[in-house]
Image 1: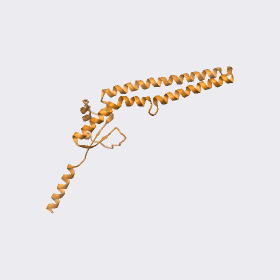
Image 2: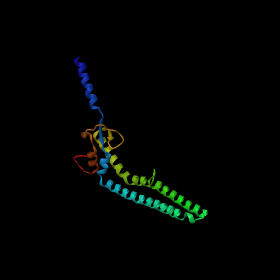
Image 3: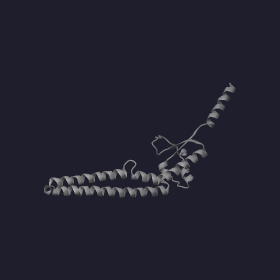
Image 4: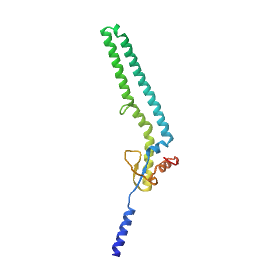
Length: 175
């Protein structure tokens, strides 16, 4: 009896020493705490606004062309009407293509975002990996990702440690 109790205690102790460690980070918080990332985000916002204005100007031109066409329609021959309609349709196609090129899937904005932010994100993920390896974490979750975390204890939040690893010390009361 005494031997089996000791065996159970020894097994329980052995299992607890092999227990996997888990932690989590908030990658949005980390990235927002890095000034270079904020600078790149601001540059992306400026580029996006500029491109949006460019597209809006194209649509304003289309609107002007259509209003001119409607006003002059009575005076135009059938051939002239057809040419004007084709011009308006062609301008609409150009505007839609430009919008797709700038803001569509794998568009210019997506490419710029990758170009600007990927190096910073790579540094963050390298710091997370280094931290996990150094402290023996088996799994580190990202609180900002699609993973739903119903409850998290702040003592397992490694976000500040990752920022320290990257050379940023942003100690705040509440995230």
